Image (cartoon, rainbow, N blue to C red; front, side, top):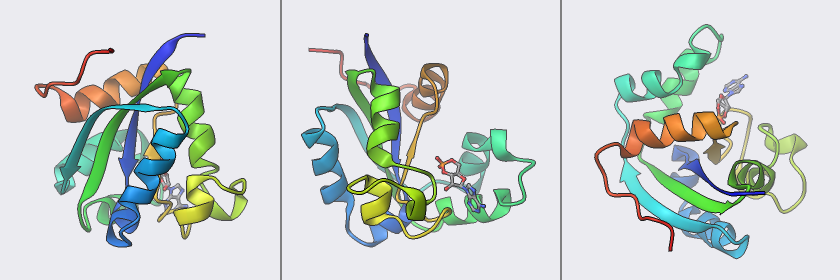
Length: 142
Ligand code: CMP
């Protein structure tokens, strides 16, 4: 197993409900190190570019509308096997199907408004981190 970095978004629904701090606390309690953190209000163009892989899906418009509704918090998380570990901590996409004590079970409301996003592979984590943090300083590993 190797130390990895993954990409995290605390989505508009969770920021609006003021659960950002609780979610970051769970992330740290699970052993992740936060290597970069930013508060961002995405433009429509930024959201459409980020979710371009879902462009053909019927929910694409609704997804981009939601993600640009209000600010999000984005982060780079580091841990051994971080991609899989962050997906496990988030829980299933649909909060109703998520395991107890996962972030989406605790803080998500629906498949669309599900509190957080996480990269689905190491390759996509690198692409997603570069999409939002290119040109920013991301802390090196200690
Ligand atoms: P996320 O991990 O951000 O990646 C794509 C997102 O699309 C996913 O989380 C869900 O929040 C969202 N999504 C998936 N299915 C639907 C749906 N049926 N309606 C609205 N949003 C959806």
